[in-house]
Amino acid sequence: MFARRVMVVGTGYVGLTTGACLASLGHEVVCADIDEAKVERLRRGVVDIVEPGLAELVSEQTSAGRLSFVVGAGVALGSFEDGRAAEVLFLCVPTPMGAGGVADLRAVESVIEEVGAELAPGTVVVNKSTVPVGTAARTAELLDWTRSAAEPDRVSRSDVAVVSNPEFLREGSAVKDFLGPDRIVVGSDNQDAAERVAALYARLGAPTVLTDAASAELMKYAANCFLAMKLSYVNAMAELCERVGADIGDVTEGIGYDRRIGQAFLSPGPGWGGSCLPKDTHALLQVADSADFEFRLLRATIDTNTRQRQRIVDKVRLAVTGKRTGSLSRVRLALLGLTFKAGTDDLRDSPALAIAALLRQAGAELVGFDPAFVDGKDGAAPPTEIEGVALAADAVSAAQGAEAVLVLTEWPMFRTLDWSVIASAMKRPIVVDTRNVVDPATLRRAGLTAVGLGRRGEG
Image (cartoon, rainbow, N blue to C red; front, side, top):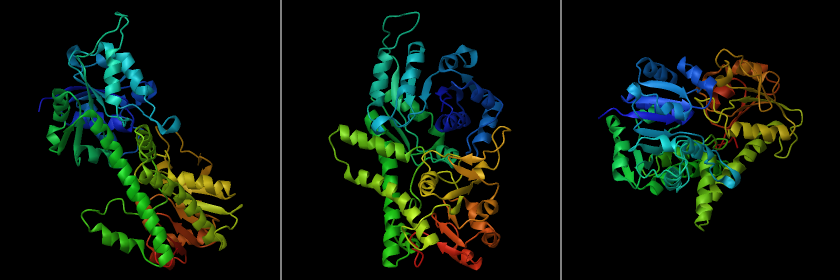
């Protein structure tokens, strides 16, 4: 495998992981971002993202001289050793959900406008961000109409190829997923460009899918939306278990042994969230609508997820008041976990915060604890509140005077808390475990009433 000169635009979750991991594979990588303060922190080895192994990898590759950081994509073009040009440009910029669920591509377009005319002939532009079907074609079109200050007339860039190379990284295990992928997907109408991008990952020895750009773009949405469906399905099954007296743990264990189904994504919870699934499910609905296809299964998946949040609130009402419609006005509740999943500090579309918002609307007083926010970033003090939830220093402090404790994120430390101490701090001994992470027997021995999802006798 030949080492390549790789430029990565964007140092967020995807961009920083991509840059550091490609550097670890032996490539020379320059990462660009428009945030000057962030670039300076990265140069000092300060990684703001909570992601196992990422800070260490960034430090290691920076020290080795294979990874560097600059402000601005234009600056990055001339930042390689001996002034050589980038051979591959990865676009890892945000593509947030815009109006109507359509992905907002302004950041992608901005980068092309900035550097398109200056790219060396033969450069491969790679869409790594999650983008709608047709974005590779749109990127090629933008490149073909790019202009430079020196040449105000249109500059055709038919000498620059565009490739779709979607990421399949899970927050909390992104480095592991990048360096040990299930597959590498590369899509382009230019076979040579596709093979050049695939060769960047050759040392990983992973199965590689070479396809057209549109199929690669759709593949990312198809994967995430299938996982969302699986999560909504298991949450619906957990509710059914409660109604018929079955146990969701036994049910999912039994079906998970079926290799066609598998064990992953079969844990009930307060709903799915994060930076990908909500955005991608709505984006795929837009793709379907534009193709005049009524994707009823996907729409039901989203509706089930929205309903799940209200179902959790109803369970809290029932546990605390004895009625599903009971009042939560001025009821103090402790929330354990606010991030959308364990192992990250990401709060985007967190189901925990969505449930907190519903509880606040019902008049509840909320105090939360999340291990991701015990310490501040880069020497700053930790936050004192998040979206209306006052933060406590630890789980016991959060539970002080609470009428119920809600476990909303599956942090492993919650399994091993001293629940007898927490019980003594509470006003009423009720734990609503929306992740089924704490052993009910442990809670009962501590004198607590355990309420889980889909567990026999706890609905």
